[in-house]
Length: 86
Image (cartoon, rainbow, N blue to C red; front, side):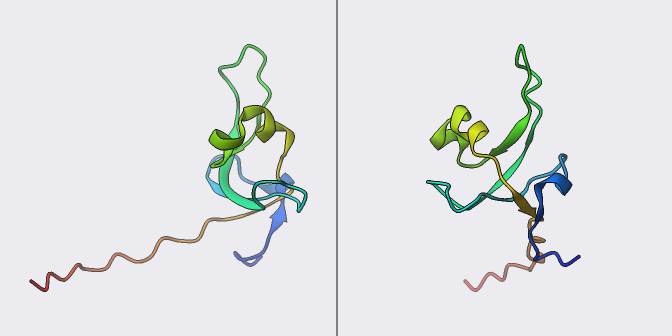
């Protein structure tokens, strides 16, 4: 499978950050970087996909609007030597 293809959220890894895609009816953004939240410290855990916009929309809205697809994050750029031109 190509790294640049969206995949069903059912196949998403739950141990790393990934790109999450939300359906077009989302009012705030269609894709964000996120990860699986076990919600392990809650009295009654309800695991869900959390993301970088949760701080803005709140946990309740993040739980209500869950992603349908995911994609791996790209590899970081190669380390390049910094050339001091001074």
